[in-house]
Length: 170
Ligand SMILES: [Fe+2]
Picture 1 (cartoon, rainbow, N blue to C red):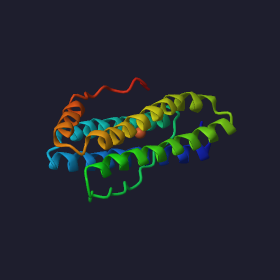
Picture 2 (cartoon, rainbow, N blue to C red):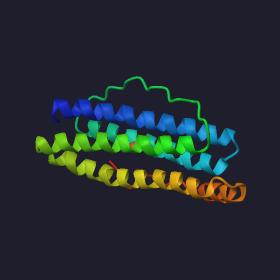
Picture 3 (cartoon, rainbow, N blue to C red):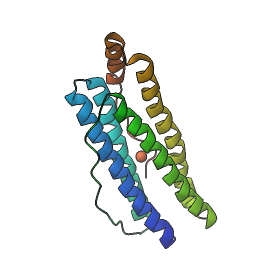
Picture 4 (cartoon, rainbow, N blue to C red):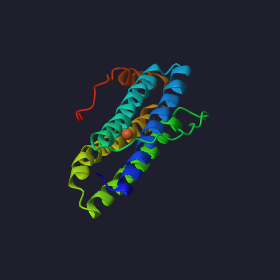
């Protein structure tokens, strides 16, 4: 049995992960429509990762005999003014996700739920990577995005990203 407060927060986190998947699907769609297929590819893989996160939280609740309560997934904004905005939106969003994971962890810590803390450890590490990766895209865009040839090279680099399933298995 998990603490009811924690169950409610874990359910909320599932919704946030699906929203993340939805947001990145929107960003994938924007970049692909603009023929920046490499940026699109990067965010398509990001969509798959967020789906994986949602499923990991789902499995964790079910493995602890808790019911999963799915809520409406909010629609992402679908108007981006320039190529930089979607990447920066992703970076800002990841910082919010980190805050959410940290507050989940704080509750688990407070009630001495060591099992949930151990489960969340993977996400704490993962969030460090998510913030770093999205910030890198913004910074690299600021460095190279203003010139057609270097934007092309950056896009080609992002096209090389391949999906790998999460290392955490439940
Ligand atoms: Fe996530």
